[in-house]
Length: 434
Picture (cartoon, helix red, strand yellow):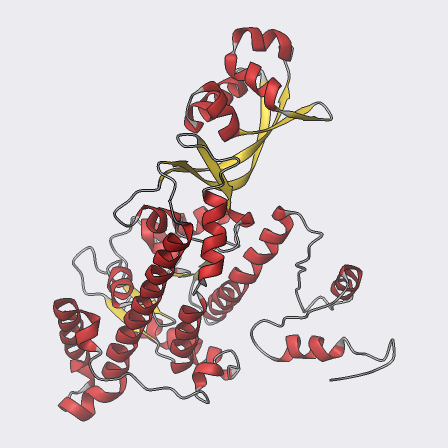
């Protein structure tokens, strides 16, 4: 605890931490005004954000998005810059870059105008390029399935290609820690289910919505609510459910005489400074159509010049097929199911780490393999994994970790690790034939 008078420099306690140490610095302040003042006084070299009860959903979700993506974006940009400074044409690709710039980067890469794209894993999913010469994993994939899928981007033209994995124990410890942190307690699940099956507002057969950012936790609803013997809800396409609309050509009254949808919008909307704000699922239920029908009709009116509108509040949309008789039992079921998913995810990560670590450190010692045979050993272990599953592969324990192990210290990284890994990437790229 540090007790100092006003103006004595207490803010340095977290400012120096944020400046010197890698990772995220979290500051808890008792007053919103104090948060705003502290953020305003941060030096330009320390980016920051605020989470408080006074923020709108959009403001808080944007801060959370930046927090989640900041670490990935920082490393992606650092690696890209390092490669570029060492005469390797490279660009970064992540969600923090404007869509137009991302598209341009993909075009340059596909046309061989740039040699390297440093990207988050989503980049390769829709990549239409057969002559990728190498895939370099800067960090450990979360499963062997992911590893194989991502490596599959290379060598689709039938030519020799290379796949490299830079293995760092700290990454494994951190990923394992994050896997356990995804757990959800039964109370939270019960609260979430009560929100889904709200007896006062959500009626059987009606289209309902749940704004993503208002949920207490983020769920993969399609899997979690449709699993089991009983289908309680039917998932609909995700949608921005709040529409702010403005009429232009024809008066709203005249237009409503010809269009039942417009008539219902006028009836159910809240008016704000000449704009009509309404909930799309509510309008769909009242008219007796789907949310897709409402969206299509709004677009048609917009193209005809009758209206302009803005959409917000990305939401899960669903129809309740059956309400549970016992909410507590259903919550218990989902809690167990989520726990199984969490355990399975950890086992898959353990299997990935064991295979990679064996290829990197144990292969020569156990089997007398030279460097050139490491790939064969790794391929054999991967084949065994897909034949017998990760439980067979992990029959022997994987690095039993005590409470004092790096598992609990994963966020305190040695600053030189990033530089060492980036240099390794540079050497790999230079060793490849163009």
